[in-house]
Amino acid sequence: MRNKVTFVLGLIVLVALLGYSVTYTVRFDETAVVTFLEQDAGEDALKDEAGLYFKAPWPISKVYTYPRKVQVLEATQQQYQTADSKSVIASLYVTWRIENPYQFFKAVRDVETARQRLTDLIDNLYAQLSAYRFDELVNPNPEAIQLDAFEEQATAALSRSVGDLNYGIAVEKVGVRRLALPEAVTENVFASMRTTREALAANAEQEGAARANQITSEAESVRNRILAFANSTATAIRAEGKREAAEQFDVFNEEPQLAIFLRKIEALRNILPYRTTFILDADSLDLLDLLNSENSD
Image (cartoon, rainbow, N blue to C red; front, side):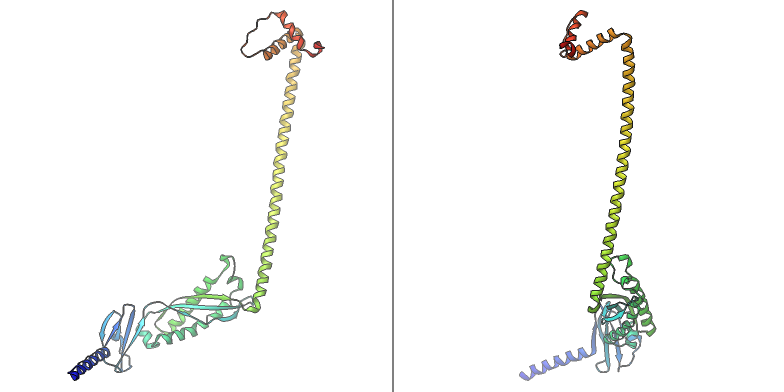
């Protein structure tokens, strides 16, 4: 009985190993290439649909699987000189994918080899950064930064290089991951930045002072114009009042007694209570003479 169990278990293991050796799976995010005796089996060996497939057992057949997703490769950082002779440490990265798995298999064979070859090609791109000044790579003004232009040029250059080599690879983007300054030049750069900022601050103060003087001058000019207009208007009003007073004096001089009588009536109207009626004859108006300070003495 024990021997039978051992036999059954051994048979199951053997069947499992045999099944494993003659089958392989392809995931939805992979593409597989099957070789026969390590030789190119043609494009019919390319499997790009997910599922379970059969093959000859190893070592007759071998399966290479390649991811379909976009991959990221970061190159080692390097130090170079900018166009204005400043030392900068830069680190580049590239995003890429396997566009033609069959061609990739024939030209490169595995992903690690592809990464190494791409790294060698990326190292040649650092020389393009030397065409840019330091203030075109690092600047507080976003419009002055030319990193986008460099990344577009680097992407186009790497795409041409990979295309010429016929690797079956598509380059998505080349970018600058990091920019740094060597320690020896950091202090000089900071000093230059401080000088630039101080100059900008001084210019701002001068512009502010000039603007303040302009506003003060404009305010004083407006004030002077207003005062001149007010003085002119007041002079005109005084002149008009004197003219009217002179006319009234001329009228009063023609009938002085009538004028005195009318002034008394007006004074009486001003001193009487509101809505109070008094009946006085003309002779009674003499009591208004008491209001005259000269007569009261």
